[in-house]
Length: 153
Image 1: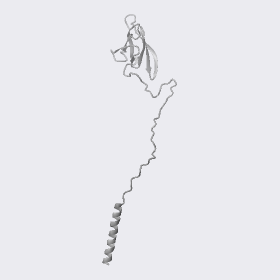
Image 2 (image 1 turned 60 degrees about the horizontal axis):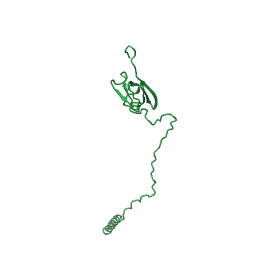
Image 3 (image 1 turned 90 degrees about the vertical axis):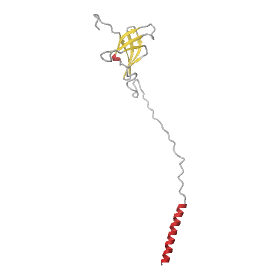
């Protein structure tokens, strides 16, 4: 019995060793081949268009131009250096003491921008400007203030 028991144990051990050796000899499965029928990725950007019909575009900012300059309401015409040549005329604009920073004077010519204001033309006693507010533009004028009789303003 002990001899037959030893034979059985020996056979079992041989089977285990041969199974382990057989599993070590079989190569691992090769990795799957990449699929060559992949879909091509196409990125499309969505484009917005807005029919204005005379209205402003909601995609543009409400304020434009130089927001750091004085607004039209703060400006007053201090004087004009007029020339027959329209490009040589100079207007002196000051900031109103009640609404803006005191003591600031601007020398502007035709075509210059100052805050929300663009100079259209300079005449002897007035300056025609284009004011842009909230996407809308309108023409306004600044006139030289002359002292009233008695020396008061």
